[in-house]
Image 1 (cartoon, rainbow, N blue to C red):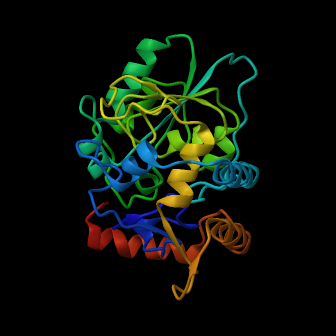
Image 2: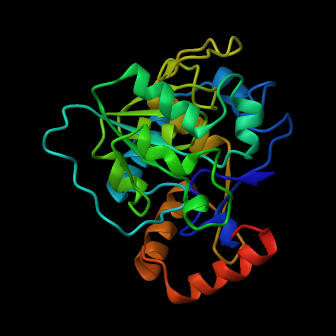
Length: 278
């Protein structure tokens, strides 16, 4: 069992209850070493016209609402006027299982950032640390404090939904940001093997030989957001549809806002004591 991909307004590390769950009988979606239920859905499911049309509408609503997994970050960022090509590199928690089981080569944020800089020496590269790290609820990656040496700008408090609109390309290890970028039609380069790679929609530096089927974007969305997860009401009492979950997230975000509130700061301080992150 794991959190789903449209999760909440707030971080799991802050103990915010998720709206979506995945229960996988074969493995788990982030483990690229073995097939998961999600991989089998994407490889074999007959994505008919009606399902793909539903997925297209869902995708358009997500993009229009600028929803992402956690829906945090209240700052703003303006794309530099001189930048002809902007590349986003999202950071991950380096102890995360998705790196252990989904990144057979490079597994560090700074290793990825250095690789992207070497590949694109003239691009304007933006690095965004993982929100759990920004909140100091998870440890920084190795030498992550030196990220500015390999990029043009480090962004911490910008909403991912807003940021993706302003970049041209996204490079990931296994970050869900790559999937969120696909929803917005961005070019995505995978240096690991996330669940959305291998289906003909991403540029894969480390291809997964099990994944041979070519999918449309809407078929991918149908598998990932409609067929695979379960969605629950905020009180946890009833199952709801993906569309109802979107509406709930939008209303939740409107009520809560995107800024860090005083009570969140207190909660984070208490959690750091128990987690051991200073």
